[in-house]
Length: 227
Image 1: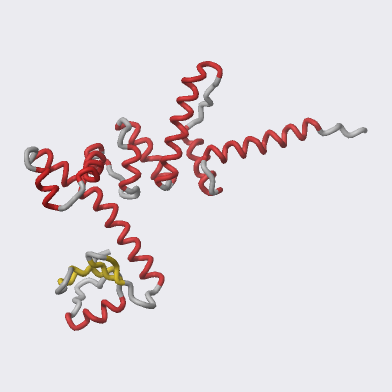
Image 2: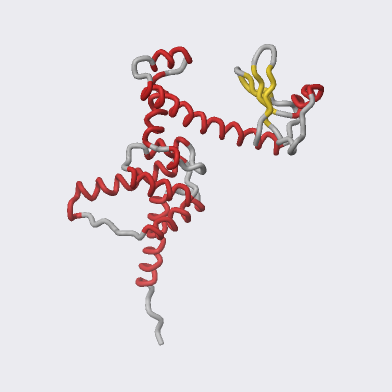
C-alpha cells in the first residue's frame, strides 16, 4: 500500500486508503474530496470520516499496524548506528529527537540481536523481542515455529514458558520425573490443534489425555456380557 502525503498548514497529514493506479495523478482540486473518503493521520490523532466502509477501515488498520511494527525496527537500527558511529555524541541526538532512552535501548537490543536478513516479515517486532535472549540457533528454530504455526506473541511466549518450566521441573526432580520426547513435527501438529481449539498447548494436551484415559478405564471396568 502506498500513501499520499500532503503538507498542510498546521501539521502533516497522511492518507490511508486505496492505491492510485499506475500513472494516475491526484489533482490538487480533489484533495478535499480525498479527505472525506480516507482516514487521515495527524500528529495528535486520526481523522476518520463518517460512514467509512469496513474494508477501508480494515485496510487503514493493517497499514497502521505495519508502520508501528516497522518503526520499532527503524528506531532500533537508528540507535545501533548512532552508538557505533557517534559513541560520544549519540545521547545528544536522542535528546534532540525527544525520544525516551530506555525504550530505544530495548529497540536497539532486539535490532542488534537480529540482523536484517534474519528478521521475519510475517512476524512482529515483539515476536523477535521474545526470542532476543536466546542463542542464534534457538532463535531461528522458534521463529520457524511461530511463522509456520502463525502464533500470536502471546502464544509464542506461552510455548517458551512451557518449555522452560518443563526443563526446570526435570532438573528439580531428577530421575523422579521423566520427560517425554516428542518429535518436532508432532509438537507442531499439537500446537495447531490447540490453537484451533482456542486453548494453550498444555491445557489441550492435558484435556485430551484425560479424555482418552477416562474412555480406556471405562472400557476396562465395563462388565463382560454373558454368553
